Length: 328
Ligand code: ASN
Ligand code: ZN
Image 1: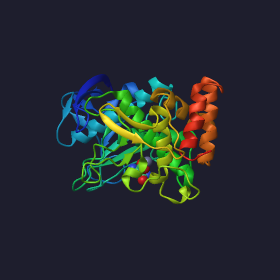
Image 2 (image 1 turned 45 degrees about the vertical axis):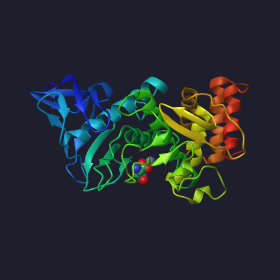
Image 3 (image 1 turned 60 degrees about the vertical axis):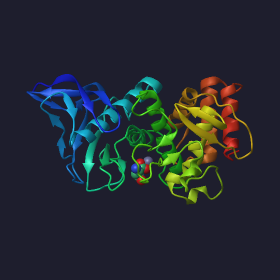
Image 4 (image 1 turned 180 degrees about the horizontal axis):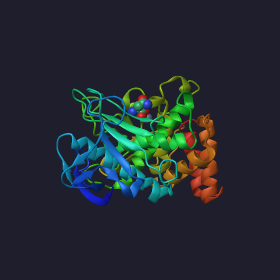
């Protein structure tokens, strides 16, 4: 049957009114993004398995009710797809142009979102109590990046490699926000700042000083591999912040940060764009499933050497930044 490629307009909860890729079958519009590997977004309708039903609408203006979460995650997947394609030259999660799919309205009062390798898909809960739906742009980018990590370094999801896996999702989640440059979801080095998962308006994680969340580690230590991967990500998130922005006090896009160093050093930062290229090349070329923090230092130095040369400012900054989180 004929499916026409359309461009719809959607208003979700977090991103204002955005353009979304849709298709039209007969008189019905679908959340199928033909410009991005036919990425589809489904309504699980509180179920916890299968695909539920593809989101549909009688017009190409998507807003309100159950559509809100669908618009958010469809936009999140599209924006993350665009980031990978336009910033680091990756054509989809597996670099083969094939899309994953998204499922919204998972379960009842589910306060999480997740990537699954078995369905090659992303799933989002509606939140409960104070927590908002888990459908923000950074959450979507975080989950989709788990797919990219699985398709590349495949960092084991435990111990130090698990922390690096989690940090990779937080790093590219921040990168996607900055890339999107959406005034409703401005770029920052906070994770989950819109979903109110703590019930008091604070973000889930802070990259400038991860310990601000009360659990994440700021620096590597020999016991880092014993903590939950969402907390052992801290030093690598901190590395990315420091490499991008440098140490000390700084305000970016209206958010104030203050990033400390383990060794008391002062770092200037090389800018987010270069830090993104270095982390991406390290992830996709030099890291493996068992890479730990020491190996991440080596991998990012190899990446910086390949991209900018081993005598470059960037290479030296990578070395100094690992030392500043106690990886030397
Ligand atoms: N949202 C969580 C994450 O992506 C789900 C999990 O614990 N794996 O890390
Ligand atoms: Zn994660």
